[in-house]
Length: 153
Image 1: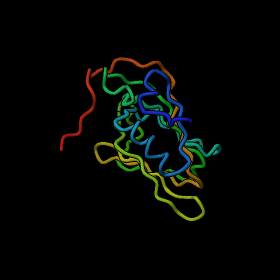
Image 2: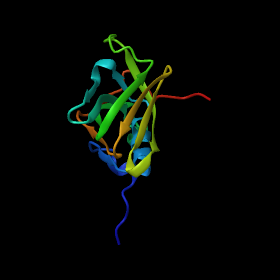
Image 3: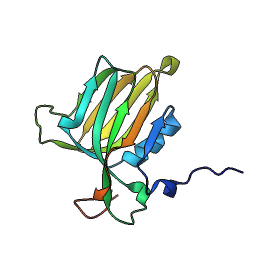
């Protein structure tokens, strides 16, 4: 009898996840909640139809045993248009915090991915199909704040 993977099973290994539907995206959204990234780490390769972020994500899968972050690539495939709100791309010192990622389905598998950022920023990606990849690319490191992000009510 096989057993499904458990959340804690990923605690000591780099994550490599792929979302091909809304349920999968919910998992990636939870894992990347509170990820931070500078504006300089956003890239849209129009020819390859890929939008990518290099983020510093909190390691929620560590069960908050220690406050750690890890750099990860968050890549969105089949992107046909990108729109931003509240993002000054000329301010290289600007750092964003990713609050949520959602998918609004359209016709024939297409749709819109919406990323909500702290401070009223947003990124919208029109996609032909939902395909999102998350891959850790560094070893974990101690979070500079020394604690887990919090969202008071």
